[in-house]
Image (cartoon, rainbow, N blue to C red; front, side):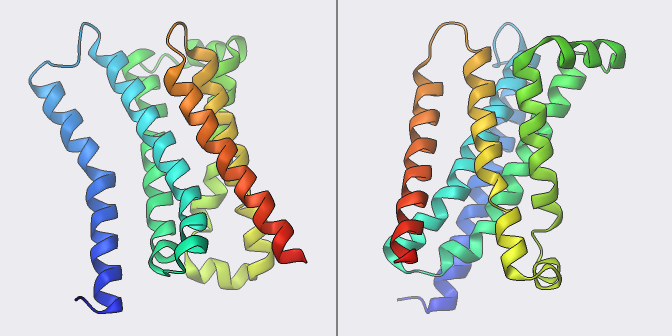
Length: 199
């Protein structure tokens, strides 16, 4: 049996592999032309879904810790949260570059005219201060209470991300519904957990 530190190291390695492997798959599909009729659109959608999935997994690490008491979930939470941020930044850059061809006037017009773009931009913008303050030194300088309150913005960002995905969907709402249900369950757990620990 691995030691406690060994188990945490293995888990963090699995998080690294699981968060980076989609990039290898995407590069492979792009190289061999297996991304469908509109590869640029496939890249935009894939990066967005991957980022939103990892964002929800980041939130889910807290209840996983509550249920198991295993500290590895909390140690790896910052790691996977930064991966979620990476994928969502990649999603935004893919949209700007592959879909909009870096046409800045058109990009600004799309942000103003299309609600789902505004939801997505707002969701990513809320993650920027979380990424910048995710390091232990910053957490210590801010104080845990202020840092903890700031990082609750992840729930707002995830909600905006789900709305972004829902509004842009045109036909099959199964996946957006699953994302929404997962977020609702995580928020409900958070509220119940907070209520119990206040007693």
